Image 1 (tube, rainbow, N blue to C red):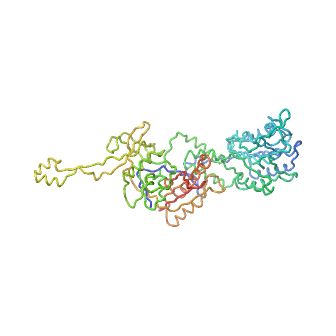
Image 2: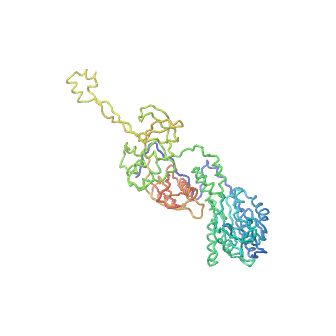
Length: 619
């Protein structure tokens, strides 16, 4: 069994937030003010140009826009705006785009579908209005044709949750050329797909790669190859990204690999056109996980990444109510997250080297392949076979490591002494939860002694002198020896409070010591992201099965250590991993595991990308 002896050190409870059970359990009453959902509205603008006096008609576009409109009606879109044969850029901009843009509200999903002639120029995609003719004049390309990327910027100014552009058009036009004012043909320019710079979450789905034709139809009752594939799959209960991947495969099969659709995206959110009850419940679960965790960084990431989540307004309100400079109430746990994770390697009982300081909720991983001695020094744990007290040497070694950690806080109200002796003057008091910066490593106070009667000396004294003399002059019959009641203590110097008052605080087993039994290693598993769910949710099945296995075997899960992989993408993969940690903690908490007994370690190189390692301890 693994036990961790702890002194008032409870490590700030780690990435605890998280995971709604299978029935999407509601959060506590204290969370209710931030659970008023606001599902995003869904709006679509459909443009189909099939009459081109100068470029050649495209009869099949009529079928494209008719079927696409029907599908968006089935998807329950709140607004469906359809236009055909838009003649000029000015007509599109003033009569169509501007009115549509003004109907968009914050957090809406805005979709624009184009079908007709198109081309790429200078690395950007253009949609051809019906009256466009060739050649185009240099400097007037973006005011003659409709620049698709400009639509993203225009719609983005209204603050939508995401913009989805679907373009079924060639990316070349027969006899395409751009000329200068004297009629000289100019090079087409850089023709590589570029990602428009935008703060808006957007996806641009294109029917074909740069500079290539897209198969249409000369039959007004027959859709193009791309739109036919899109219409066939758009009602599927998947993210649009997954749907389009299937569309790409369908088009490749239908054209013998001649037409290759692509997606260009700068979206950190999940665009889902058909919201099911399961998806809606998963969105609630993700927000509930983060809300219960109360980690401001993760909630801020949620606001940026989950812009279509129906609780994103609640998340913004939470951030307003919890400003950056507001001091959070620390959440505490009994042992260092690093100590719990390291204890898995030891097959014997383990005790902790307790302290009056507590640790941050998440701690960065340190090299795991270490000797037991290194584990003792770094993590404040040591193997034992029975009741014992940490040695002064072990405490001193551990305290050296404490100077390397940031975010330490006092676990309890602690007295600060002028000297490293508990009989010295009190100079300050450190409140629970206040910062505890370590200025230097531990100091061991000098051993204490006591004066005792020397029995041999007293016998000789009485024989030579009188009993009265021996009693009146005790120095004759006494000696100094170590005080058997004294226990060595380790101290650290700290700068305490706003005034940075220098003083000493003991860190040893004399500080209200008691045992915390974290249990014995029970099961280790790896969990992945949940399929067909918002990113940041984990696959619940192996976790629930492990909890049930412990119950079947008559055991109780007593502690859980979560390890996350290395990630340098703070607002991408790292954010999703943070959501997953909160989600796991939420699930465990909903199944009876105290959040004080869930700790995590961040950046373990042995953990695979986009996964978490979970270690269960049981009794």
